[in-house]
Length: 328
Image 1 (cartoon, rainbow, N blue to C red):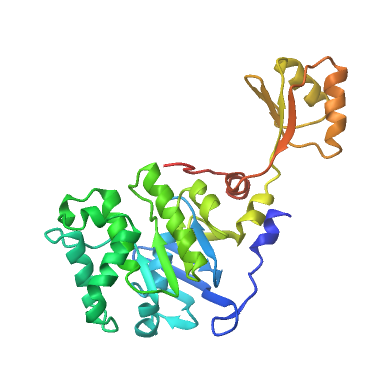
Image 2 (tube, rainbow, N blue to C red):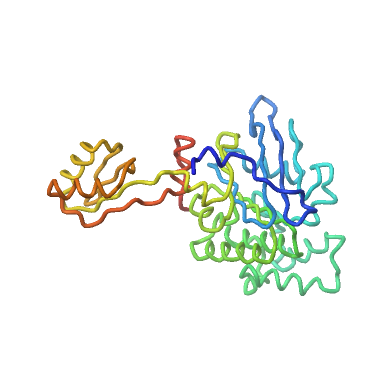
């Protein structure tokens, strides 16, 4: 599938249908005083029931977009709908059904983790106070903070604060969960646990909108994604289709890399390079078996031959001409 084709709008009915669209923007724009254009005419469509990755380098407009979706700042132009309602006008209707962790949690440092969550829960007018401690205990357990629940928040590490903020977002069942860089500050084990939690929430029917600058994170946990760069939407669609849009690369493993490079170039392959005993090139247009035969005929000892699938990183580089972090 060509990468450009996935820019087509994801079809869906409104959220009051059987399977709809939980976030939809049309021409959403934010220009700050001084002329800085942070988000430029964004058309975004997030299907219900997905884990939707919002991907782009730091400074690409992701957090500004999320702040507009949550009604924290006013757009300069365009429109945004969340759960079928216009934002920010319908914030009082929408936000009780949305859990959010944006730009790190706001915590009372002098209170324990448990007491912070008790305060958060008490601020929700729809929360039953009789079951408050049960909800808080369940949320702490879900993010792995039960043992540290009595510790003051000011003594929490950055990763623990992220977990506590996520627990606050999970105090009540949510139709939509919006997470801005949720694994920021976590060690590899913590990152794996949060990814597993996101998958669990999605399996329970919660739509998860996850902003990240980590390509690896999006590929591992998300079903759909949108790619932002310099305030503009580059592409959106199912992650598998986005990655499939990249051609991948031919990989030949051989103890004769110099001779293999010569043969591949003579066959008209491009971007040919050697890295130790691996020779890389753009995949051939014709039958790869013909390339193998040419290598063998030239006396090249072929120990491995194949075409590695394109990755989300390959697709991003192909679309934008730049790359960004693939691991923390």
